[in-house]
Length: 471
Image (tube, rainbow, N blue to C red):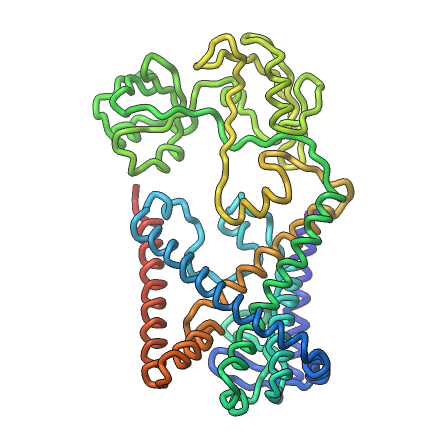
């Protein structure tokens, strides 16, 4: 049975359990702002013991935490600026972004938006990760507060009443009056402690992920990113499905395309094109990307390539070496793995368009960039397909990967300098320390908050306009 059935059952049981819990303790739940808060004293004794026992260590960590806070704030401002730039000036990229720029972390997000480059995100993952991240984040605030002699009034968690009772947040409630009386350094260390904890959690689980992957997985194939393609000037296109192209434009080409693969003749060569592939190139006025008429695309080759004529393939190097043993026109048997199904193909190799003496299958490998891809490629080799040595290996790997990614993401977002995050108070205290004037500090803080919120609103508008614009 597919795991998602168990996962949805767990989700339903969790909702029932939390609903009963909230109903029985409804007298202890108070609405504050957007949240329903449940306060308790549990955990305070542990927090105070740690904060008072390791004074020297926490004093040193206070400096590291504050420095890290400034670094993450700068990184977040830079990343946010890059995102705004892309949304405002690169509509081609925005058009393929499926997820709205402002989107809460919800279970099944990759499945809902069909984000194939991300592993599935089950509710089981969500509840485990939120619990680990929220508890360590808030406990870190509390431990540093105890170290700085700021009273902890309550611990607890909150729920958003507008959703089913699964969206919750943990909190450690401090004595704000005592907090405001402490030095700027003490307040900054308490505010940055949660983010510091998130970074430590990310590093910890990333190291576990590295070790687990090396123990639990083995390379078993090669994955390709696309079929071979060429960039061709639109003016060089002569025939589409045997019909001469008269209107040499994007619209003219689109009007002649049928469902499925279409035969394109350009520069004396045959190519293939689909409507969906063309629509991704909406803003290309002078050039068009066409699939080469290759053996791979004609055979509809898909999945991870595991064998060529019975020889196991476990790397791109091995794939190329094995392919080069054959000549154009020779027939080879290829075994692939696709959606846990083994597929077999009998393919006649073609001649490489750049060198006719070289055998040609017609698959392409794309070098991916970005922080997320760098993290994944550090763990495993790019375009290599791995199989788990035991049942549950992939489940655990994806859980550890999501834990690492979400922990560092929360650390970054939390240091965004707006009022609802720790980064907002962090920036205000910094401005106050520099200006020595509370009015000026508040003015600067409010101005920056409004600017960032306006930019968030702006990129949401641009995403909707670009995403839903009729081709």
